[in-house]
Image 1 (cartoon, rainbow, N blue to C red):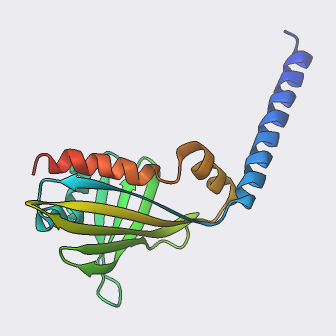
Image 2 (image 1 turned 90 degrees about the horizontal axis):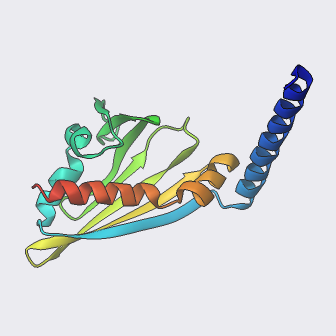
Image 3 (image 1 turned 90 degrees about the vertical axis):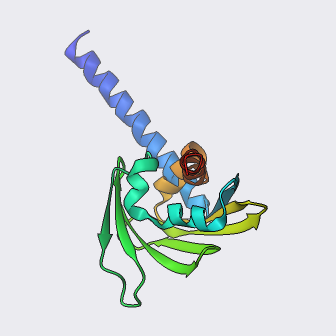
Length: 174
């Protein structure tokens, strides 16, 4: 193929890519910034045992495949625990927003520079010798292109479902 022809193919590919990104951006602008997703599990362990797994951030890399490393950070001025999770998509700082051991835990993203934010609410309800865990994500995706990818490609509830699958595997060993 001649150099001119390669240049034409490259220009066409660039134009198609730019048009696709523009279309995704436009679709994302029509989506709401906020979303709500969630899921749940029935677990054989009592709420206190599951609570210990949910709150021992130092052990997250041992059972959460998306977390490579955790670093504890100084608590907030209100005394709330904070930590940074490092994984294949970079790092995110989290903090405990509410804590009612062993029944309700709310964690939130504490990094205002990210293109997303929000909270996860964990509710543990005793059932017989075990419990039911319900996780609710109240998320925000600020950039339209990220919103489109989150909504149409990965799914807004994907992170919750990955987390629950990892937790189910982890609690099977508790």
